Image 1 (cartoon, rainbow, N blue to C red):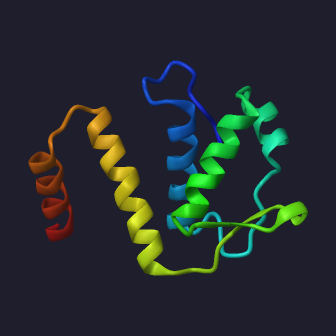
Image 2 (image 1 turned 90 degrees about the vertical axis):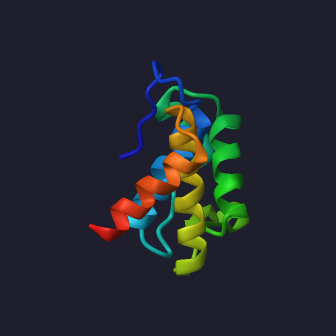
Amino acid sequence: MLEVDPTSAVPPFEQLRQRITAQISSGELRPGDRLPPVRRLAEDLGIAANTVAHAYRTLEADGLLQGRGRAGTFVADDDSGRAAHAAARTYAATVQALGLNQAEAVELVRRAMSS
């Protein structure tokens, strides 16, 4: 289930992008899964349709989603490179929002990968 926290300092577009990326990375959303239409998701989340469309377009540019015109928006075929790139962008945005610098963020990744 997708949610947006209206009290968060992270913009709704970024929250949505991060959550969809996380669901793809975790396997909750799988290649070929259809996402809700922009207007319906915007209504469900209580945000502007342009916000959802922006998140979908960004995820398409990252290679995680695939727009198929009137058929809808789908999770793109699995590609670990694209998924890793999208996860890295999500991580970078999160640590920046938390106020960490690049060296601190990289050190956290090193520690996580060695444990």
